[in-house]
Image (cartoon, rainbow, N blue to C red; front, side, top):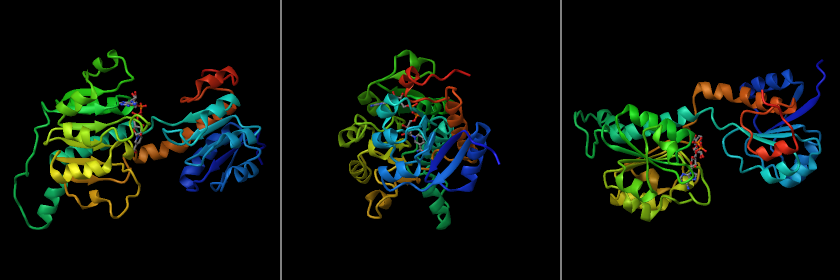
Length: 334
Ligand code: NAD
């Protein structure tokens, strides 16, 4: 039997096809994978995972109390882009590396946003229903934009926003974006014009949201924003549900302030059956599935295992969240 130098607790996911590739990568670095249920509270977490060198979590809170209670802890990995479940400040103070996996599905999310955009533009769901109810009418109910020459506005111009811009460029669309944290030069190389939020809402035929959820972006698209959009415009959201004020959006869709919406994310997931959006036929809904592809899902556990293994063996992970930790936890570049 292999002797293990490290112990890594994998918290809360038990699908073998996710666990095995991760275990293989950990074992290559001399780390034992221990799979546990999501602990009920901090004390239970500390008791169960007392000898942890590493933690891999999906949504279990890794609080200051947990970080301070796990004396050997060197790395916490969150299996997605957001690390809001981890007390990053406490981790940095304690010399614990916080790692995320933000980049595996950026093309998938942009593809999904494009799929929603095209489905809105071509009224795909409606036409499908027509054909199945024996209405063979080779026309599309308006508005039906040409796409080429129309304007795609991206809110947030990071990894996914840029992928979306490339897709819009392939359709010969005019590209504009609002991202207050980027220098002007970051837009030009993608052929994108940086604009204010107000200008983006006024000019876009399709508004696609690619910002994170922060205190600033919560309900960024509210009644006032929706009223600034064109009556023929579509809103596409693959970022986080609360960026859009759903009650205002339902009113906008019902009263024709905008033409329609394609939403992969909602304020409450899964939605309450009474959510008015479920009743409207000018909205297309998908269940937070933008990230999904066979390849991305296959790659995820391998990446998680490799990232944790890197830190345990003194190497810098591909996506370190708290760079300040390097002052107390020296990790070498590959
Ligand atoms: P990223 O960090 O690379 O880019 C986000 C961009 O948003 C940054 O450039 C940032 O400057 C900008 N931004 C921040 N605050 C803003 C604001 N107030 N207004 C406008 N722009 C602002 O992130 P990413 O990888 O492109 O992912 C974007 C978002 O997509 C994630 O935060 C996540 O919420 C979402 N996401 C969804 C899925 C899904 O399955 N639906 C999967 C992955 C990511």
